[in-house]
Amino acid sequence: MFGKISLFLSESREELKRVNWPNRQETMRMVLIVVTISLIVAAFLGTLDFLFLSGIQKLII
Image 1 (cartoon, helix red, strand yellow):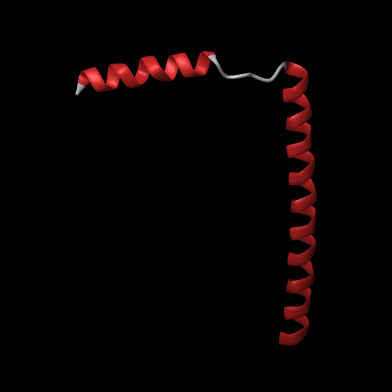
Image 2 (cartoon, rainbow, N blue to C red):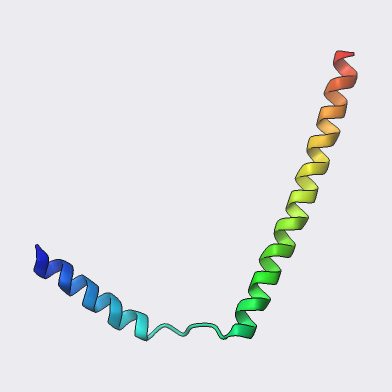
């Protein structure tokens, strides 16, 4: 069992050496894209929430 775990870890380490890791500029660009999309989706969902809440309040009152 420990032999299989050791083999898995060594193969994983070798595989990680072959990964083409992004540089700092690429990473920052991708982070900005993710943050921007997240803010857009949050604003959209917040607007929908506000509209639905307003509509339900008008129906109740």
